[in-house]
Amino acid sequence: QLTANYATTSRAVPESYVAVELSYFKASYAYDSVSFNGTETDITAYSPSTESCSEHCTSTQYFTFPIDNKDIELSAKNGLTYDVHATNDTSKLSFTIPAGYFQAVLDEKALQLEHIPSSVQQPAAEVKVESKDSKPVEMSKYWFDEATVAEQEQFTEWAFINRKEINTELVSSSKELEMLTYWYSKSSVTDKSNILTWIINKK
Image 1 (cartoon, one colour):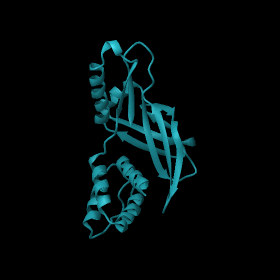
Image 2: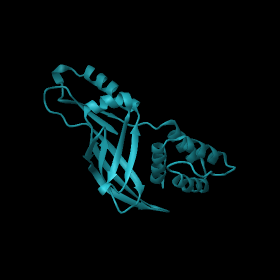
Image 3: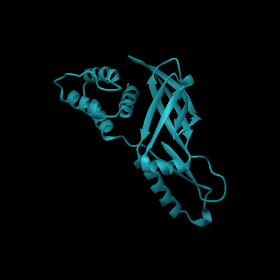
Image 4: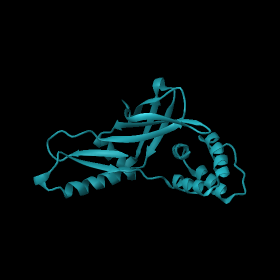
């Protein structure tokens, strides 16, 4: 979720930020910084990290990182790719937020500022917009929910092995698995990571 704060008076306003819920297979490290557009900044936890175990143990971190309003405007044209770094760069994850997500924030800001009477103007206009899934992520989630528990387990193991690129084929007579692997194969590396994170959080 992106929260953008825009000044409506000369008073100082809180900084804009992106809130992230990051789940990953449990490891000996944690993530502590984010980099984008050539700058690196520390993350700020908004809730304690959690762990859960079923077949695999996973860790989830809840954090925010600041984003300048100029970066929001730039991202409305080009989208935003950011990297999350573990301590000592032992691991790095990359994510991309589509340009349309930021454009929605700018559109909402324009509407808010247009309808704020000057006599009751607050020092800041806060705009929040939730991210939307890409088509491959959306369809992968749909077909995963349509699959049986056994098919879900089969797909999860295959998808994790092929999370960077598709190196092995998942052979099945199931229509659900066929469609699931089709859309997963169509997804980018970032989308694959998002799909696996979503599956982890369902377990």
